[in-house]
Length: 164
Image (cartoon, rainbow, N blue to C red):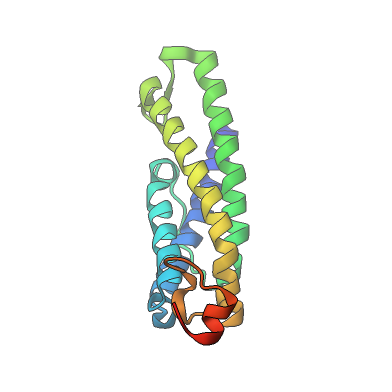
């Protein structure tokens, strides 16, 4: 129980840092004006908000984070913590069954949280992948065009001759 509380507290802390980063990135107009960056930032904010289903159990202090380079390390740590928390919940459910009462939640509510965590785990993986492109955009200041291609790629000759 103590280990689970510590893991949830750490998850709450990393989530608070991601909340701060999301707010900071949203205030950066040069990023929000670009479609690919905007989609990533809004997805990150949605993920952070959805993770509150667990982080509200053991809240953390507010945090100020304004270094976009830390997104990868924060998401990676959350990935690991989500797996640990899922395993701890599963172990407690197996040991205590329907009698489980944890953080004023019954076994059914814990099972629901575990299902949500599995979905958030998948979303975390997608964000980790998208973060690579986002970090490249930030480092190269490649924010023009949004890095989103719609339609078919033109062949070399079509681009050269500027024809369809």
